[in-house]
Length: 129
Length: 129
DNA sequence: CTAACTTATACGCTTTGACGAATATGTTGC
DNA sequence: GCAACATATTCGTCAAAGCGTATAAGTTAG
Image (cartoon, rainbow over all chains, first blue to last red; front, top):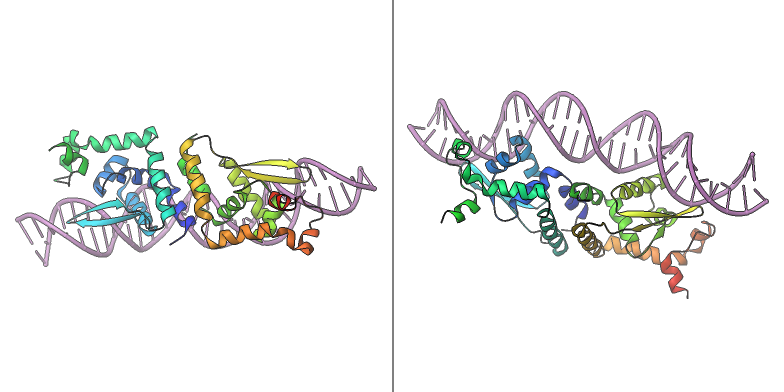
């Protein structure tokens, strides 16, 4: 599929860029996205749906939880631009801060215990080996 | 300046993508953009203003005529993505057709004589040497 | 089945932006 | 100055999309 307009529209929103940035490395549970971005859950969910419609992410159900991950578009040009964009985002301070908060999720027990056995982010699982 | 949101918003419109595609090689007069895209002049002008605000193009006045050209953003990441985007656009048929119509501007005298001594596109000038 | 929980969607409201038509601005030649 | 021309901007309208609130849908535990 070749639809640059739809593709770039999907990237033209700060919240969606932050979501993509957090999904950059590996799949991540919606509950973490809500906590880290400190935005309402319906808002996060709507933006995830937008990204799904644009073919940029896919979801996997895991019991009550949904995990989202980036999927590279079949179009080679689009995939290249998406990869480039993720690298670009990673240069910005606020995007690094978001990622940092994700990796520290394991260090704020009060908050995450409240999420009652929410699945740990992959990064945390790797660290705790 | 680092503002991915503004950057991608500018790319999230078909008319603006077509304009960038036509400006890809060298600067081009507004009158050709209007002719080739077959869109109203105010529409073209508004989209050019949008691209100018986003820092993607600059204008040069030449008497009555305005010539627009792409300027690479100072941000290295943005510049790279813009270059890739232009290359990507160039793979699409309709974008190739637009470029083709530009290079054939010299072959439809009736239409372009009506433009009374409009400055020739650079590509035409190069061909006629 | 029911209660608790996570995520998705529907609704109403507001903002953004795209559009055509009309008009303003800037330039040239007389 | 004025007329003709190229381009820019303004205005009113409409559609797209953002948001929060409320609610629906799907899952698990009991």
